[in-house]
Image 1: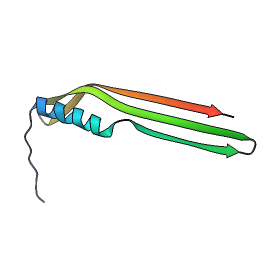
Image 2 (image 1 turned 120 degrees about the horizontal axis):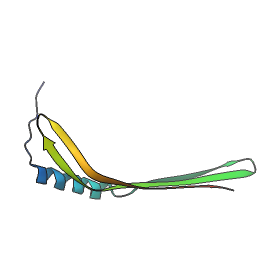
Image 3 (image 1 turned 180 degrees about the vertical axis):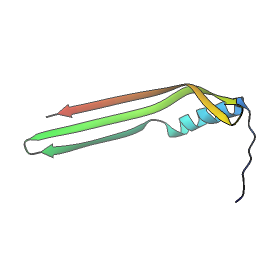
Length: 77
């Protein structure tokens, strides 16, 4: 089996993390359903922001101070 070796510094990997956060944007999901005379709907959203990458030997990658922003809404009718 072949090995892939890559070299990067902490600044480059932090930039890569922020680019990935921007590419993902806000992930969201919503839906609804009816149960006889009742109904329910939901909306969920989440995104990541900030954070730094620390590269520590041996082979340890730490993501610090990364924020998860989320929103959950549930309604019944």
